Length: 459
Ligand code: SF4
Image (cartoon, rainbow, N blue to C red):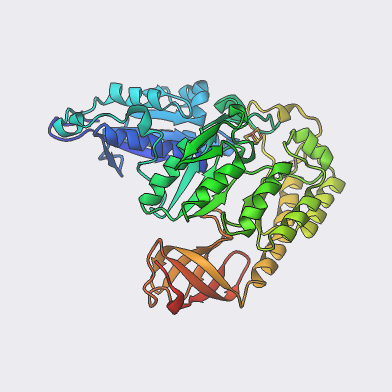
């Protein structure tokens, strides 16, 4: 690995793994690197040093992270590790003793220090005359977006106050720390001014937002807002963007945001990781929220906002899950009629308390349950999509591919949900970031197909 020549800016390669929350961390580190005059490069060969932002949530993510570190070491040789797996430095050191430095999640200052040590920033008279944004560079949202320009993740808090037995995030990221609401709204405002059309609100537990700050009141645009989920939705609705809520738990106060969805102030979309439907398993999982009246609450939400899309995730084969409890989970799917569902076969995470639970479910049974679960939900999702054929859906264009525009309706979050394929996208002159009304002509298990109503099109 050659030291960078003094005639050019130092170059950093960046590998970002993990969930949308890790993506937000990556964006912040990249922002700071750019502020300090580092060039960001796409290949190992071009990089003077490589930063790998890792995930450590489940064992397969740990393996993927270790592989990525190994690849960066083999291809480049100078590697700094950050992110969730950074909390488990021993695991990294054992597999890859040659990494230059290891830092944990959200520890932006330590990552930057490691980069400075490995690769001092270039003296640039122009950059150096510009006052450093320092801490504000990680707060103000003017940043390098890893997501396409028209949507952005908005991280409202770090950490989590719960202790779900299968999860080690609180031990890695600590208890909930919310960002004050004016700070979040200012970031959202800047993103909107930069051309973002859709904000994806992320955290470990969006419904708990502000509890650590005792819902502190702040002022934004001359009005008072409390640091809590409902006020956040009200503030964001002032920006006229699509706002999508992720990682919401079924607390009673979630009911308060449903009317805002019915009024079109935030997208009628809830991403609620239910994880299971059996009260006994949920108790073993130590899940937050009112788990006993879930079906009733879903019915009430849909009565208040019939257009509501509900996405969820589930774990099958949790230790002790009986055949009856699994069947009850399938019954729940039939009754709840969720729109989008992701599922995982339970996999132990090193350090999680669930590992000590008795009666692990054999691997073949877990896999068989997962396949049955997915097949049952696939039928439900397909029918729910089919019901949209003949309707007109407001969509946001993500990409244009040949004649097609690949768009998403209000019911589709990027990366995790389906798409709306607009057959006449090219002809309609659509571009990424355009809103368009699409007449839905067909559907399958995941996606919708349709045609842009050209006269309705808006930029
Ligand atoms: S709510 Fe549970 S699963 Fe989610 S981060 Fe907190 S402890 Fe982990």
